[in-house]
Amino acid sequence: MRLDYRIQNALKTELERLLSKHKGKQPVNLLFYYPLPIEFNSKKLLYIYKRKKKVQIFLPFMQGISFKIVKYRLPIQKRAFGVYEPSNSSFKISKLDYAIVPVIGIDKTFKRIGFGKGMYDRFFSTLKTKPQTIFICRALNLAQCAITQPYDLQADCFISPFASLKFKDINNGNMGSYKLYSLRSSRRRR
Image (tube, rainbow, N blue to C red; front, top):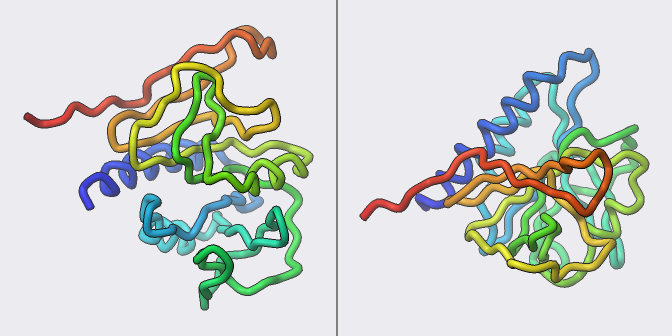
């Protein structure tokens, strides 16, 4: 699908930029997702980044109304809600560096409009340090007002086939002042 190709290129460019900044000896811990049919098909990028030596890929593993993260490994099995997951494991990581999160859209505060279960919100609220978060969406669904809740997950970057945006707090911690920076903007061919 051509739209997925645009997302894939933009996401790969952003991930390569982020990974190039990571100079430590520890591997980069990256939370990905295994796609549902309505989501961006991330399988090719999962394969590419799984093969990198300095990157560890994790996927969500549902537990009740939230999830934990497990190391990405085969086989992947279809579980609740039609979600594919690797086998459960007790592998622990100290922190996530980056997270790729599927969304339906975002509101003006760059918070996630998701699929209605709140699993990502619950999971991220348990983390001691928040990873840099990239939202992925097949459409450019931007609400012009704040329609999310205070506990909803907020992104650092939003990538769609039509635009890629970065979110920056321009007032040193004052959550009332935001500015959007465009990473890229695509024009439709006529």
